[in-house]
Image (cartoon, rainbow, N blue to C red; front, side):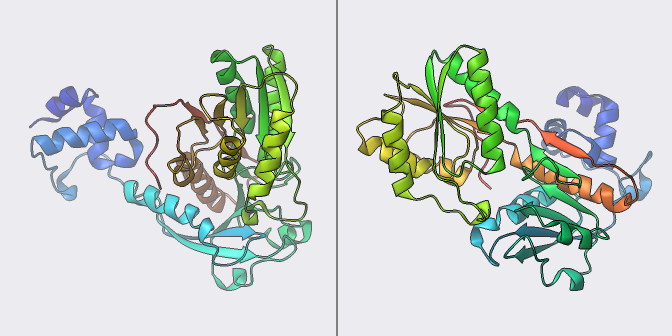
Length: 347
């Protein structure tokens, strides 16, 4: 079978088929899947590598990187998500030749005990913002902040979700559904992602003519977001405050999802039923949480898999380019998943 025939059946160019055979890491995921499906259907087996023409894929150098969870207890099972995401990435893309080490520190004022003995090429930082002293000690190791920065003044490179787009998207969605009075509801109001999403939602709601209420729980100063567990009692309080809000609130935005199960339970116990009495949009999509809900609200996916790829890509670049000056920031846009739309596979 000729490459031109494969290209025609897969709806791509012959050059793309050649890249799929020799340099698959350069081909878009959907195109690569179609090409491989055609090749499998017709039992097409490429010639051995030493007999192929054109450029060949060269695997990158194997790197040893650490993920430092700042302000988190060691062996916290809820923090396995990064390793799970990385395994998915590695299973589909041979470029990610990474040996991962997970590091912990109880406070932002201390470095992980094993940092010096791990022989790391670079570090991904997540959790609480490390103290200035710790960052100074970390200066000799390439590092990139991952997920929402705790302050705009964080001095290093970062990869984070676009929280402003998240809030704007939620307000636009509720407006499109015909709601006039809405509310943003959340626990942990001082968590930076919640603050940014809430501010963007309120600003957009005002801009498009919605009446918006803010119903936020208690702050947890000095406690890492990685270690916070939502309490049912706090959800009960939030529901009571929702009932007391002026006007009839029919649209809700929950900028994060870790407390939504307890919130919906409190809402039902108060006599208000999700979907029937209020419509909700969630600002985060966690399959383990979402698929345990008794209904399927609209949800904003922050594209965690893409974020993981981007932070690894950028850390590998920073390892190769340690002397390039300036702070580099990368923001990943979210996507709206409406009720009934196909969801990404659970990790």
